[in-house]
Amino acid sequence: MSVAVEQNEEIDILEQDIQDISPFLLKILLEDKTTGKFIRFACDEYLKYGEAYAADKEIYPELIIGNNTKIIQPRTAKSKDEQINRTRKAAEVFTPSWICNEMNNHCDEQWFGRPNVFNTPNGHDWTPNPEPITFPEDGKNKRAGWMKYVDSKRLEITCGEAPYLVSRYDTTTGEFLPIVKRIGILDRKLRIVNENTNNETDWYKWAKRAFESTYGYEYQGDNLLLARENLLWTFIDYYQQRFGIEPTLVQKKQIANVIAWNVWQMDGLNDTVPFATSEENDNQLELFDDLPKIYTPMLCKMKDWRSKEIFYFQDLKKGTKNEI
Image (cartoon, rainbow, N blue to C red):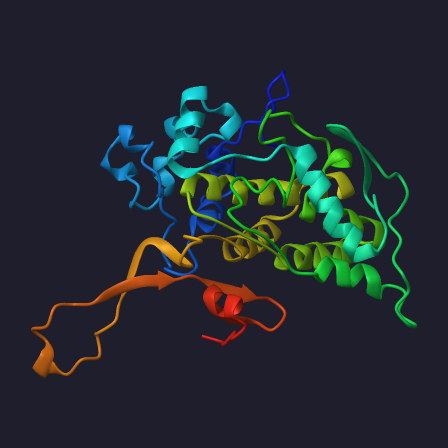
């Protein structure tokens, strides 16, 4: 199954497509790993559909499937008025793919020590490098270079629909991009996996590691869900291209779980879950039970898949990462 692409090559992402694969799969993509609940809308534009769609409400699967499956749409499918409103209220401005490509190219130039590793920019377009990507040998282990690249940790802040991570379509024009033209961080890692593995077992192992080392966060729930869906469909796209069949449901769920951990909902100003609080004084003595409850914003958690540690993002920023 593929996400629908219209005749004009504009992308359309339908939650019902995920639901049809497995209801459990959609629930994973809606999960907030910090709270154990669902992510929240965190914007007020859906309130016109009812109180259940208020900014502080969780995005329950039944709210966005069936007849409601087109409620959440990519920015390019929204009306101009909606786009302007989002820009005014949330400073939402998406970056064209050609700029994402230029910036990712710059990061890779620092990594490889040479320019235009994956493609050569040409104005608002680019020409993919048709040759396999080469890495400097690391001692006796000739594979160490590409493995380190796949495992390198990358983060897209305030990621929106995640155009720096995956580039299934241009988030400013809606133009669908074939795999050979994709320029996201994960797209590049998956290309490296394609070029350096020769069987499904190794391919899946390293594709999963690519997802495990790629992170992003976003405040608004609809954008976050679209980002997560784009990552999952990207995995399916590359798997289908490589092996001619869809990945198994187990593989989809495993990748979806990684995505739910690695691409999370957060207020980037204070590193907390929007509208979520934790109770601080639940260990007070009974003598003080009549005191008012004290609630504090809930700090976001993230996961290091290599060490299996779960820690607060805030601690990572401070350089004091401690396992929770």
